[in-house]
Image 1 (cartoon, rainbow, N blue to C red):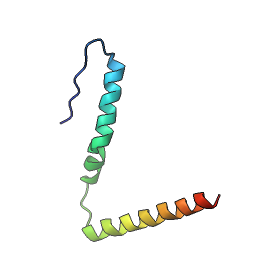
Image 2 (cartoon, helix red, strand yellow):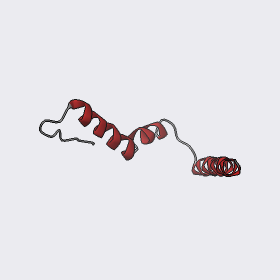
Image 3 (cartoon, helix red, strand yellow):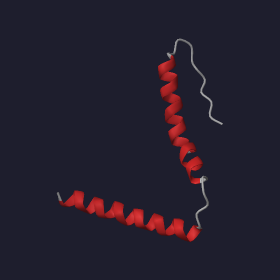
Image 4 (cartoon, rainbow, N blue to C red):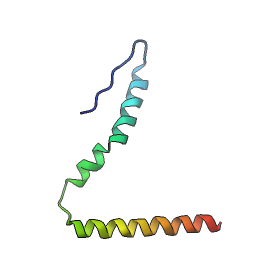
Length: 65
């Protein structure tokens, strides 16, 4: 569970921004979305390899430019 202590004289906007940062860093939303359905470990590894190859390809294209 995430909790943010609002400091004295701190605006709600700043506290909300800190909460959003902490929420994103914790990966809560990613975990929830991952639990929507079961994926076999072999399929998740394959997907991860495909994503890594795509990222590497994009990096190579950026370096060429």
